[in-house]
Picture: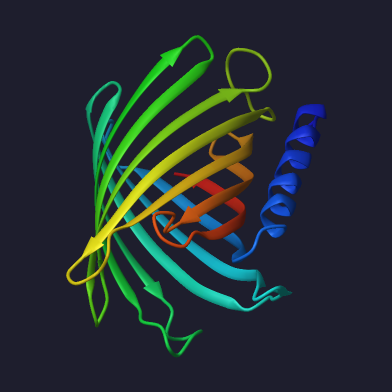
Length: 229
């Protein structure tokens, strides 16, 4: 069965996160569904394509269901050892179509990733640098993410079983004539291996944006369907 006692407990935790953030001032809630496609070219080289939509759930102290943006992403990954990889990504974000006072964005990402496994737990460290390019400015962003995942039934993940992914990420954004901005993100996702090439993930994320000045509280409901060729 996909939904177990553990998944019910995690759902309660997700719900608690949203209500905790809602009780604070200056917060926004989103729903972000994503469809991702993984394609392995060789044993060491692969592509990832994804399409994500971000929709408001709550803003300005009221419920809201307007689309904020669409993201189209391509990522290439090269394995340089059994547990290390380098990546290069390109993303285009459509915002002008939904909010006329905003700008579309081209994002270029460079990535290094390393993982370690200890029994059923897998740990990952990811470093990213990004250039966020709009018509009016270019913002440079530096990111570090620590991740942990594990199967929730047994030692290995089998078809029909669930798994847990926990991450925390620190971000620094800087640009010409702008004040540096620090963000922190905490994410919990529950996933299911539906078939050998299909995964579904449901989770929640909390973001403390610009916490070195006036903190903006942001909460996400995340749904993610991952297909592999």
